Length: 454
Image 1: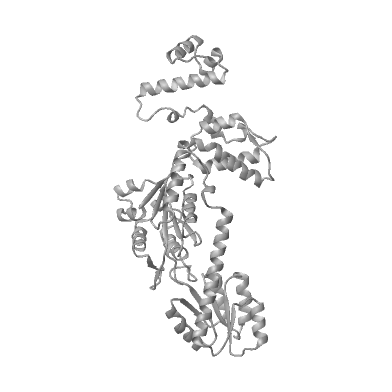
Image 2 (image 1 turned 180 degrees about the vertical axis):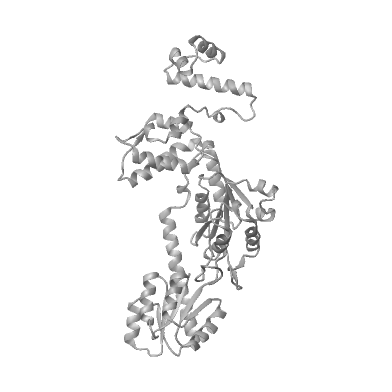
């Protein structure tokens, strides 16, 4: 719903204009003082301002200039009963959208308002499109060529054109929001807004206001009307991050919105209809939360029409080289195109580490290493302590199949350690045995046991 602010010191005109424009489906805010109007423009999400030219105190021309300083794109239509060519020229020079003399023709005014709103809508859409193109939120922003990532690319392609709700699950730091953006910008809503909200980062009251908006005076601190994320996402996509952390009371309200695509702002009574695609994400197992009564089952199935599971980085190690190159290129560009390479021990540390923070952690490590490195080489000294310690971790899950009995698993690990020690010691058995803390004769016995030939 588009919101119009009308400013005129003659209250009769406020009543006439509201009666004329409200039936067209616009939300109307009125005030008889330009000073009050300026505060509304600062604090509210408006789509058009219609203001009288001559008013006591701040004039309409002064209000026009102040509005353009706050939001240069917001259209302003000027009205006056004392119209002259000079005044019209001055208003247009100061970037008024149009100039109307009183008394006006109703249909002419409605047509001017409609054109101004359409023009502003195009400006906002172009701004969003430019941002989308500059951010390149397509497959190019998701880095990876491993089998799990290729499956995700295939899913993105299949679901992008539909309106089905999508739940993206996976640990924190795996790039769930990047996938949501790739879906949005690959589909028919790509020119519409992509709006996100973190459901786990806000209190229940704040989250409700963020989602559905609020009216002026709805609660302490609500000094002006505010549109919520659902309203801002109209015609586009709303991304509900960490939706599993949403309080139960809001789950009920969200379910109603998903069913009807309509809601009221907090403290309001007017029903607002929207057309929004929902993509949600969570690092929790929401199905388990449903079984434990922590999450509504009916809401889960509304959000879970299609599920995309993003694996942790430790399960897609084939992507590490691509990710490293991507982040090295990014942060060397941020550091005056500083040229760096990775020492072999750094690669070894990267492969041995379990990456509990996933891709986000890898990016942070690369950024730090680029800054700290000297001589064009990133060494293990440039890495955080947890990574250098990880060089000696076994990472048994990498080479022990799930469900393997313990005796066989231990043998697998033992064989792996022996082969690695020999490789690191250039196949010198005495050195490899010393590295493992065993005798050379025991080393030879184990090599025979595992058919290790050098």
